Image (cartoon, rainbow, N blue to C red; front, side):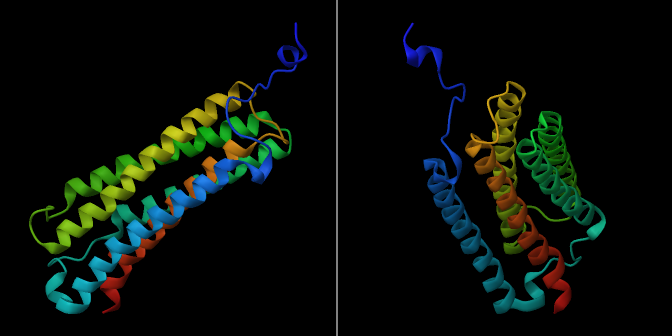
Length: 199
């Protein structure tokens, strides 16, 4: 057997630390996706400024589902942080359970968001507000779905012991993406649920 075969790299992806090429890729993703949401939100605020109260639906969006959903998504970021911290402490159980909790909270967020969509008195075709609301929150839901797929692979690889304190770039990169998804939601929550009440 060759020396390379004996000392094969157990990690299927990634490299050492923050020097991994994946960091640059994720930075590019965050910048481009951040720009996408900025353009969409510009459209929303443009209509809001131009048409004022006429742009908004007759009944302002409620906090009944959106506020608990925001707390759930923030809790998922805490769980992701807990998972990554567990890895650096050498606690595989914390890593695995933290990722599992992050996934569960992300799925719960999507279910509640779907329920909120269903109870809206407007549709995507009813007016500019409805079109922007469903487009922007729909893009966010797509990003949540992608994040859940990434987290599912990270959970599997964590369970198979592919990560350790020295080789954890894929885990850190995936969790950074999840934090980005959460940060985008906070912006959307402020836009759709807070700003209409500020006049």
